[in-house]
Length: 228
Image (cartoon, rainbow, N blue to C red; front, side, top):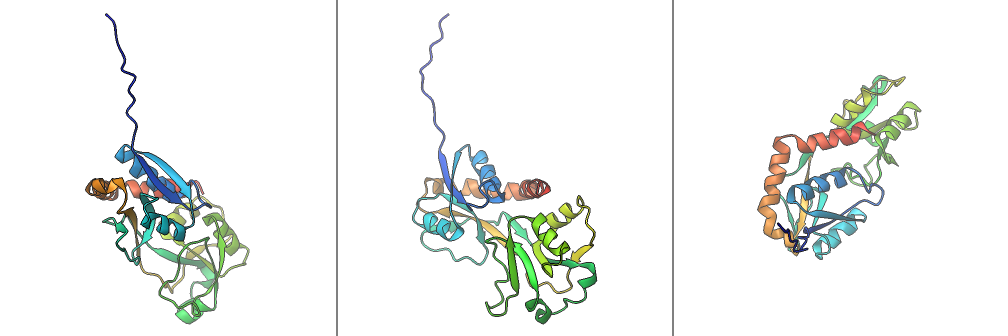
């Protein structure tokens, strides 16, 4: 018996996306890999700042991006896919002895906080009303600055903060401040209307729904921050 091969290789579709140059394999990249895997597509990531990502999404050079905020306004060039892939709470953390010092927006505005580089914080406050911030790359750096007294607190997602604090041996006790300026925030995937994947919009949205219901997105976040 002779076996013949046609030599034909079916290539996968390529999903073009982008993430921050500072976090080329960060959380957004993990979410995008998840979507691409579920779609059976290859993923090509180009590092770009978030503002540039939106421009490239609108002009069709990118298919899909993560991290579109709930207050972003869609236009004729891209679609905010429903539902949000995560809904998370940014929480202000301080030393235990300072928990009762920060009880109002006035205390908050005169304080200094560690935040994630290029993160979006305190959108409900005017630029003049926002507190001073120190930008760092990791949660461990935020905790370190608070331990050294270089900041009054830090801002991070509660679930991942608690998870990391459980593994650290710190000389201080870190707790949420009584005053919390931020509400829960939703994050979405943005799909270019010029993308070939618009024909699979319903499929992608079903992937997002299933990923939320079975906890896949939460697990990705937990696994990512457990290594930070």
